[in-house]
Length: 211
Image: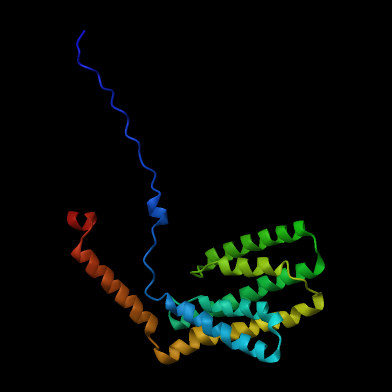
């Protein structure tokens, strides 16, 4: 027999792509706009509640203030309608949650209603293409409201607080930036398109090389 040893090649083990999902994406060039808007939209109604000594109602104003997160990638005309629809949708979801919370204390019922609300909010956000942050904020607010002690008579007043804070969000997210730079969204969209075209020209892809 030959002294030559037979080496068996082990099959290559494919590494799991664990680093890609954990890699931080590049932040948006306008990340500070929704963040700044929600800070201002939150501060105004909450300072009013603080001056009145009613910070116990802050949850209801926060629901309206969080609407300032939406629509920042849209032109102002579309943003006005989108943010208004978000405020109405937030108020409707919160109202449904508060009514259920005032009628039952069963955890099973509350969880089931929360799941139905979350599913409906996801469908509506996808159908309307409301944009980021999508249904997350709606679901967060309505799910929390389901477990807040409530009476049926308190619901209209609490929803009025949400609508009032939502109106402030609309002014902050739509009217205020439009007064400063009326064509701001269009300028940003044009700049992104030019940057993408320049990057593609500098490093063309497979389709461009074939052409």
